[in-house]
Image 1: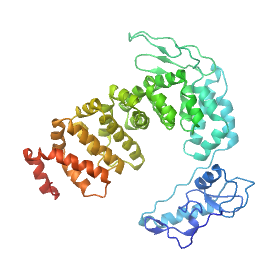
Image 2 (image 1 turned 90 degrees about the vertical axis):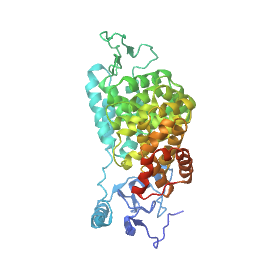
Image 3 (image 1 turned 120 degrees about the horizontal axis):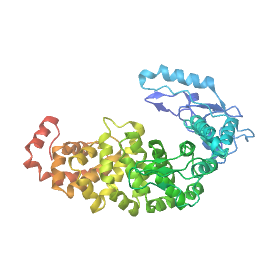
Length: 457
C-alpha cells in the first residue's frame, strides 16, 4: 500500500511549520540527507535505507517496483533546506550539517584486501588499512553497512583474534617482580598478540586497529555468540584490564554490543575478569569519556545476579560514585543515556545489602553524586537516583545527615512539585518521611526553606 500523508497535517519544529516538501514522505520529519530514488521520488536517506533493509522492493510513494536501488544525493533540495534552517535560526531551528557521502565500495574492498595481508612485513600496511577504514566509516552509517556487506567482520575478527588458538600461554603473564619481563610469543600472520607486565598489555598496532574498526560495525546474533569462545573471552578480558586506553575503551564497546544478546549477557556475567575489567575501566583516571565507555556494558551485566555480585566485589560502588562526581554542570544530551545507566547500575547495586552498604560508606560523596541526577538527566534517572538515596539513607543515619546537609530535601520537594513520574514521587515521599525525624535537629536545613520559597513538609 502506498505511503500517504495528509497535506493539512501541521508538523512543527521548535514551533515553526516545516515546509511540506522538506519532509520525508516516510518519516514526515525534516530531511537531513535527501536522496532521489530511481523512480524520481525523494526521501531522507536513513528512512529509505530502513525501508529497503526491511525487505521492501517498491517505491513507498509510487509503489513502482525497484529495479535499481541506487540513491542519488539531492544536493539542490539539501541546500534549500539548509537555507530555510538558517533563515529560521532566530526561532530556534538549527542548521542541518552537510552529510558525508558513503564511501566508495571499491575503495573499501581494496583496503580490506590490504587488511587481510599476512606476515610481519605487512603489519604497517594492515595498520594503515584499518585506520583508513575507520576514518571512512566512523561517521557514516551507510558506509558501515557497505563495509559489512563487503565481508569486513570475519576479516576484522581474524585480525583481532588471529593468535587465539586455545594456547593458555597466548597472553603471557609477567612475573610479580616488577623488574622481570616476558618475551612476547611468536604469532604468525597478525602481529604480536601480547606481552603483559604489571601495568600494561602490549598488543600489535594492527590488532588494536582492527578492534577499533570492529566496534563500529553492527554484529549479527551469531557473530556475537561466536565471541563466547573461552579463549576469545579470555583475550577480551586481558585487553579490557591491561591494554592501552584506546584498546580498553574499544574492548568495553565490543562487550556493550555483545550484551544486546541475552545469551551473551548470561555468559559474560559468569566469565572471569569481564565484570572486573569493566569496573576497573569505570574507575579509570584517564578521563570521563574513557570511564563512560564501560558503564553501559556494566549495567547490562549487573542485571544478572552473578554480574551484580562480581561488580560489588570489584568495587563498583566507589567507581560509579567517583564517575558521577566528575560530571560538571548540565549533562550533555549525548551523555544522558550513559549517565542514566550509571545511576541505574548504582540502583541495582543498592538492591543488595552488601552493595547498599558499599554505597552508603561513600557518605556525602554518594549523596552529592546522586543529587546531580535529580531532574537533570531523565525521568528514569531521577527515579533510580531517588531509589538509591532511599536505600542508602535507610541503612545509615550518617547518610541521612549528609543528605539533609547536602540539600536533598529541597531537591525532593522540587521533584514533588514537578511533572515527574509517579514512581519517583512515591519514593521521594518515602525518603522525605524518613528524613523528617532529623529536620528539627538541623535548624540550618529549616532555614533553607525560607530562602528558597519552598514549603517544608
